[in-house]
Image (cartoon, rainbow, N blue to C red; front, top):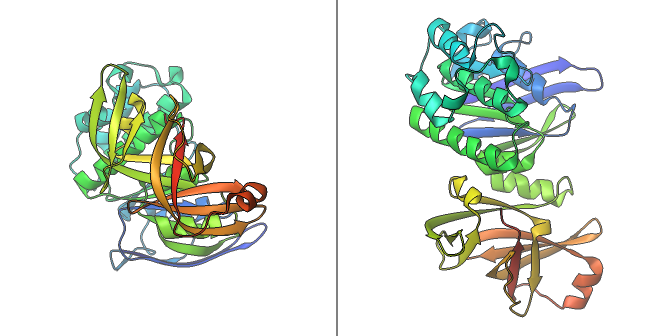
Length: 342
């Protein structure tokens, strides 16, 4: 549990927050640039001045940052330039005191697939490679609460999803709590069970990821994203695609190999979805799911449709003209064509 009360005057507004996180595994902090996200993290970790902060019902605001049981990874976290990757990891493992987890250097290297990088000079690393090494070093600090500020922004989406899946697995295995700041709702929705929406220094939404995301969509703050969970996987050697069985459903999706490295989840953008009352012809680049229209509402100049796929939610956007011509109504059975699943 994390409970904090803080006030800090910033240039354009005041950071004024009363926040309590009762139960979470991975919490995301979402908001536009300059909304106070990074300052919030610095307050929790102890790098900003006097605040009221409790972690696991214990006050920590009187403690220096290195005594709080918290590791903060900032956006531009440097590596030691005179050491190779292996040296950077070994230094952290050796010199971090008060470690609360028993995660080993080899476990981190294996989980993040860093073996090919170990002998590399850190100056030769790409931005994405550097971020993975920095995250490995953060894990080796051995704390139970890890705070990450835009940790994987340099990774392409397939590798970012894969790394976030690894983060989730490490969180579960070693009972580590994460708080992640990102301007990408796509990233946070993929891995977080809890979301905090920050705007001009104030918490305007807090709760489960699905509920906060829904509120964000309703206020036209973000193009809707859908999260589909899948279970059984079968590889089709003939076509080099995977068959994914949607959880609690008999419906399947066909995806590229990179998509199955995402921990049983698919993030689908609303632009990838088109709907029809008549089953469309299946093409090489689309999947078709049967769904029920649950809700339709006008947001800005488009209609946002909420679709139920055997208990899971898809969001689709239609122009006002297409909606007016469709005659769709709540409760209709429709076909959702999902395009370009990578």
